[in-house]
Length: 127
Image 1 (tube, rainbow, N blue to C red):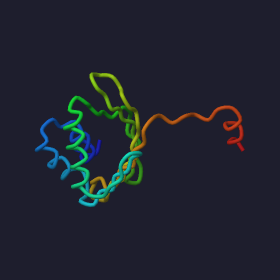
Image 2: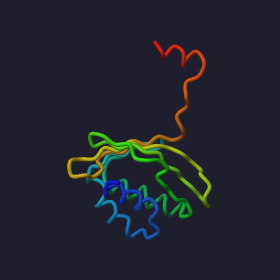
Image 3: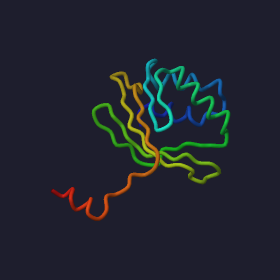
């Protein structure tokens, strides 16, 4: 696992809010872009604010990578779970882009699981 990704995921579970910035500095670029269905912002400071708010509002929530990493050309994707008391509250996946120094420069997050095609839609995609 890339060092930046280790710091990124440690940050989301960090109980000591004064340590969040240290993880961010090791994980993301100054101008990191972060997009999910609820939020979109640019910058390390904005990401830090988001993490601090979440850790303050929901300190019992934990986040974990729930799949193997799939990576190529400075892109990494993986499934994650948001949990409370060992119960999965939300599943999602991220696609991150790393810069040439190995820092995260973009996070594209998605909520939920992908829904397989069924019926006629599935048959029509076969060509």
